[in-house]
Amino acid sequence: MRIAVNTRLLLKGKLEGIGWFTHQTLERMVRRHPEHEFIFFFDRPYDPSFVFATNVTPVVLPPQARHPILFYLWFEWGIPYMLRKYKADLFLSPDGYLSLSTKVPTCLVIHDLAFEHYPKHVVASHRMYWRHYSPLFAKRADRIVTVSNFSKKDITEHYGIAPDKIDVVHNGAHAEYKPLGWEGKEAVKSKYADGCEYFVFAGALHPRKNIVNLLKAFIAFKKRQRSNMKLVIVGRLAWKYDEVLEMKEEMPFKEDVKWVGYMDVAELSKVIGGAYAMVYASLFEGFGIPILEALECNVPVIVSNTSSMPEVAGDAGLLVDPTNVQDIADKMQMLYKDEALRAKLVAAAPEQVKKFDWDKSADLLWDSMMKCVKQ
Image (cartoon, rainbow, N blue to C red; front, side):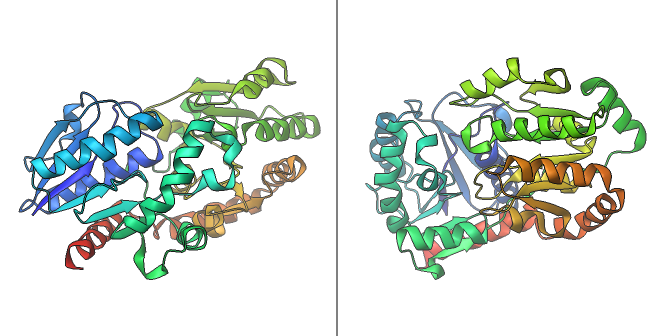
C-alpha cells in the first residue's frame, strides 16, 4: 500500500504539539510497516532526519502553506495532484487540514477546536478559514483521530460527527523526559534560576496560554511568601504577545522571572525535570503535552480545570480556574507550603503516565488509518 502523509509541520528545531505528534507516531509507524511505502509531503526543504526509514519518499510541494490562501492552494490543488501522481491508496493529515478535492481515503487528525472557543485569540483571516473549512473537513474525512476524550466530545458536539467515526489517540512524552537526580536538579537550578527552586511553564506564548494571569499569580504568590522562588518560562513568542512583553518589563519581581525562549528536547527535559512544580494554567488544550512531560519527570502540576487538562493530569495535579488569578496563586502557595501534598502528587505521577505512550499511540493511529481503507 502507498500512504501519503502531510508532513508540513515537521520543522527542524520548531517542533511543538502537532509537530511532535506527527514525528513520534510516524517514526514508529514507518519502521513497523516496511512492507508499505510512505510519501511525505513537505511544503519547504526538509531536514534529512525526518526521513525515518528507507520506505519513506520525501517530496517538497510548494508553496509554503502558512496563510489561508496558501492553505487552499496547497490542499485543494497541490495535494490532489500529488495523490494522483503517486497513486496513493490513503492520505493521512495530522494537522487538522485535508483536501476536499480528492476521493482518496483520508484519515484526519484534529487536535482541538480552540479557535471555536477562543476566536479572538486567532487572527481574523485564519479564524474565517478554519470556521468555514473545519466542519467540511470533519465531514469529508473517512476517519477522524483526536488526542483526548474531551476533544472527541467537542468535535461531536460542534460538528455533528458521529462518535463512532472518531478514534482517540493520546499524545505521549519524549523518552528524554525522566526524573532528575539531586545533582542534576542543582545544576539546572544554578543555570536557570540563580540556584533557587522554581515553578516552570513551557509552551508557545500566545493568549490562549494565559501567561498574563500566570505572571499576575506569581506576583501575588511572591507578595505573600517573600521567598526566593523563581518562575522559569520556556517558549517562543508566537502571536498577540504584546501584553506579555509589557508585563515582562514593568511587573514587580521581574528579576525572579526567567525567560529562556524555545529549547530543544534535551535541554527542556532538564529544565522541566528540575522544577519544583509546573504551572500550566492554559485557557484551553486539546491535550497539553507539557503536562505529561512534567509528570514523566515526577514533577507535580498545577493545571486548569478546563478542557482536556484534568484528563491528562489525573491525581498528580492540582486544578485551578485559569480566569481566577487568586486561585492560581492560592494553589502555588498551597503546593509551596505543604510538602506532604507535593509528595502525594509526585507519588501519583508514575501511575498516571502509564496511560500515555507513543508506541501505543502509533499502533492506534495505524488502526484508525486501516479503517479508512476497509470501509
